[in-house]
Amino acid sequence: MATLVLDPSIFVDDDILHEIAQSLSERLRRHRRLRGGLDRVIGNRWQEFEEDFARFLGALLLQTGEQGGGIVALHEVFPELAPDHVRDACEVFMEAALEVLPFHAAASLSELSEHVGALVLRALEPATEAAAAMPLARRLSEAEAALRAGAGLR
Image (cartoon, rainbow, N blue to C red; front, side):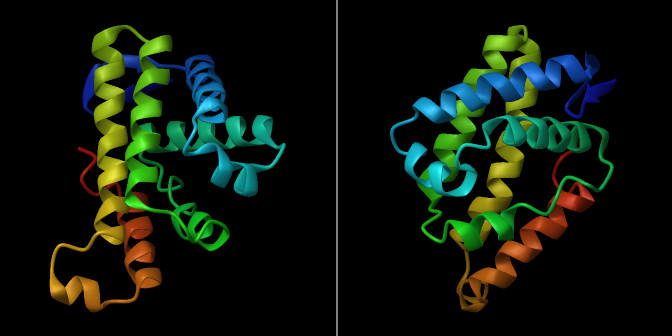
């Protein structure tokens, strides 16, 4: 059982993580802008996605260091990944969390999602010329490293 990083008084067990992953999966499959790219990335392996996402979310909450690894791989399979995709995914995640959790718990979990989204957005939308001069692959790798280290999540 994990506690929410931003609110340690809220406990989340594996069943809840799987419920969130299932709700997210259903919402992503219905999302007009995200569905096309996800069809290419996930195909018909939605159950596998749900299991992987529940593990990712649990690792993120427990800060095990196993919560990275998908950003670069996602971009390799879906090079059209754009900031709007990240923002849409964060919004869909918040809706899924609200469906499963009480409001205050969903808000805490959604804040965590926004931190993860911000790491990816910093890679996709660099704030400085120096950062923009760095290759996108390197910026994405750095975002993954920061995610594994739990940067900005506490």
